[in-house]
Amino acid sequence: MADLRDLPLVQASVADSATFGEAVSTLFAAQVPALAILAGERLVGILSEVDVLRAVFPGYLAELRHTAFVEDDPAALDERARAIRDRPVGELSRTVEVFDGDDSETHAAERFLHAGEQALPVVENGRFLGMLSISALCHARLDRAADEELS
Amino acid sequence: MELAAILIFVMALALIALEWVHRTKVALAGASLMVVIGVLDEDGAIAAIDWSTLGLLAGMMVIVGLTEPTGVFTFLALRVAQLSKGRPIALVFLLALVTGVLSAFLDNLTAILLVVPITLLIADLLRISPIPLVMVEIVASNIGGTATLIGDPPNIMIGTARPELSFIDFIVNLAPVAIVTLLVVTAGLALAFRSRLRVAPERAREVAALDAARDMREARYVGRTLAVLVGTIAAFFLHTLLHLEPAVVALTGATVMLLVAADDVESALERIEWSTLFFFLGLFVMVGGLEERGVIEDVAQRLADVTGGSTTAEALVILWGAAAGSAAVDNIPFTAAMIPVVDSLQGDEFNDALWWSLALGACFGGNATLIAAAANVAGTGILERSGQSISFLRFLAIGAPVTLVSLFIATGYLLLFQL
Image 1 (cartoon, chains in turn orange, red):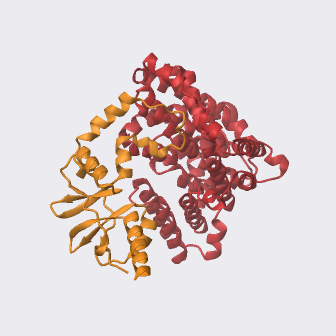
Image 2 (cartoon, helix red, strand yellow):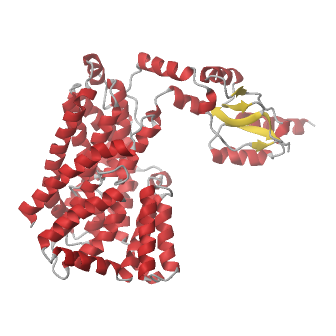
Image 3 (spheres, chains in turn blue, green):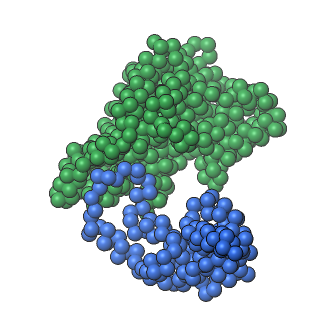
């Protein structure tokens, strides 16, 4: 088994002063379900794809169960997007649990199952190492098993 | 021990009102403390719990939880928005009507949880502020819930504590005054809010064009779920003839719905709000402690002394006192404490007018402040999560006049028809 620091962590982060729009661009480019928000080198929180969804679309959607009848109102959605785009991402970040570099893969798997997050930050001595996603964790495990089989 | 019981209960009420700690934690801590220090023993604590109330609540939670995925409540709310054709007063009256009726036959908290989210969407589509509409719905839920035994937790507690009062008795004695109050109060709110609810004709046309029934067509088990819901409500009407307690009706309805409309029992039972049930459980034990130590008897005696034994005076003191108490703390714990007081006050001669006074006071008082009823907290909470908010004072500015008008109507009703 490898420690988490040895897994393919993604360097997906933005400064807390970055705009929400910049953070979403970084998130999209990094192809990871969440990115870290940093104040200097200190981790202050994360911004996940679900957080982005909640910010871009009306807040009451999370309370609804039935919306098949709704048709898009592009003007209203554009207005909302413009209002959120330039806000500092630090205002929208969320604190979550973090992994330590020497945590085990099994521990990470258990936390992913129970925390409801798709990606979480890995830190060591207060320093951000990178984001670990569920797919990265599982992909690394499958690769390692295949390597063991070949050797 | 009497002083300890009073101190624990008053402290618990204060903490519930201030919302510093979750109300379920407060109720359970107060109940535990009463048992641990010996205000009442274990057997007394178990005996103090009104299992019928808990059963009725749990049954209705399952029924509503399984009905919600059918989309029928969304259909109703959207349909009334379409029927209003963008006219503010029609919109307010129709939303109040739907919320009031849902509250009467489900319960007011559930009605709010069902209609407020769709109201936010409707307000968004109509490009108007959702706050006036949500306020109307909260007020309508508390008034509509007054009409039946299952409509509001105070009525559930009264109905299960006094089996002499049937589901039909509640409707016959409370529905007329609830309907009149709902009409008067809604008219006032519609006039007050009408300028903030003007809808552009093109927005109203867009909402009218939406296919309100689409979610219902795509949902599973719609027919059988609605059949069980209607059957359960019919059984409430007939529970005296059927010789079944309301709790048995609710739990049987829930069981039938689980059998015919739930694929996964585990997820269906997740609809039960355990924190609410434990809140009630803690309250029942605390009130049991007050009864055990004679506090309830003392309060009833003082009330009898103040009113000089006049039933009219007693009924009006209960009505206005219950409203004031509910406004200050929360109508659930206040009613839990008042039920044994009214029981003691009436002595051996059953007097239903005193119970209707308590129901009207507690339910109408639930509109006075943001913390007076669970529906208020839930409705304003949904607003807040969606980026809107109503402050305590803003709520009070609407809730207090609504409550005063409601209580004047209730006073007139009691004097003319009950006393």
